[in-house]
Image (cartoon, rainbow, N blue to C red; front, side):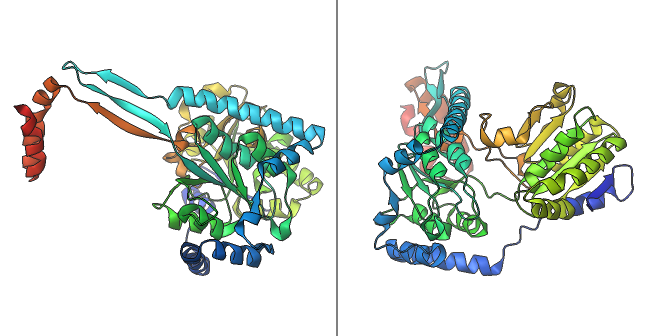
Amino acid sequence: MKIARLDTRHADFDTRLQTLLHWSEAQDAGIEQAVAGILAEVRRDGDAAVLARTAQFDGVQAASVAELEIARADLQAAFDGLPAAQAAALQTAAARVRRYHEAQAAAVCQGWQYTDEDGSVLGQQVTPLDRVGIYVPGGKAAYPSSVLMNAIPAQVAGVDEIVMVVPTPKGERNALVLAAAFLSGVHRVFTVGGAQAVGALAYGTATIPRVDKITGPGNAYVAAAKRRVFGQVGIDMIAGPSEILVLADGSVSPDWVAMDLFSQAEHDELAQSILLSPDAAYLDAVQAAMERLLPTLPRAATIRASLEGRGGLILTRSMDEACSLSNRIAPEHLEVSSQEPLRWLPQLQHAGAIFLGAFASESLGDYCAGPNHVLPTSGTARFSSPLGVYDFVKRSSLLHISEAGARTLGPVAEVLAQGEGLQAHARSASLRLG
């Protein structure tokens, strides 16, 4: 396997690292043009455009969009029909995701207020969004975990209506995805995908209601559509390829770390898996484990392409330097494979999710640990956060000004407003001074 080997001691390290991390965000002109046309059609023709594009891209013929909606009873039937092991696993994952987000809501989604010396009450009110749309991929694979991670935080936040869209190529519905929608409290499900689904959620049609925010991953067409409708509705983020970065002190089994690197590489050829360690012999051991384990996996070709195209084994001077380098990269998933993971945590500032210790494999976070798996990618963890309950609420400032407060604040506002040349602002404040 021709995976890149870098050394922070080498003069060309920074250049090689930038090359390794580079991912072009340049938009494909053909995709952008196609998405712009589809969105314009949906905005103009509504249901008719959704039906036409669904027939074209998914091979699903329907007389009306209403025929593309899955009844709540069908969602329950999908859950009831699951094999016992799948049903139990889905219930466990849903319960853990719900518990985590309930704790999150209690910690960061509460209103507050305080009373000024003059009797004015100032604060913040937190209220849920009215209606959200969640996009669940359904082309190359089915993602019930994506349903849980998007719908449960919205439900915990108190969103009145959760509308899910999921493509069903050739009409094939995935029972596990529908069962996850049932467990997550999704209110309505439409078997529509692609840019037309994003447009329908953003603009609304006669059948598909307009939402306030769209969350969930999708292909390049979905990402382009979300980018275009932002402002018309809110969106969670524009996700890039999956990423994992492992900080290793050499104490964890090389086989474990190799498989953790594979776990992201198997997503697609653009996924990125990087290992940082101050132990050169350990890097060699992990690479040997990768060579030995790769042929045992069904997605070996995709993993190899990902690792040879964007993977890296990086030798650092120390674990401290590895932590600093991790902050520079700001990965989506960060594993601290160390005997003393908490020792390094205070130095780690930028990551979507941090997995601490030998037993915290990234795959547990993807499915059932509890924290959300919708995470910032491509270095955006420097300024953004995982999807959470806070994404499904909004905050309103509260200002209950007392008469004494108006007398105190009025002259201040008047002076500042006059300084800005806004006389109506100044008069609005001064009229209340008596």
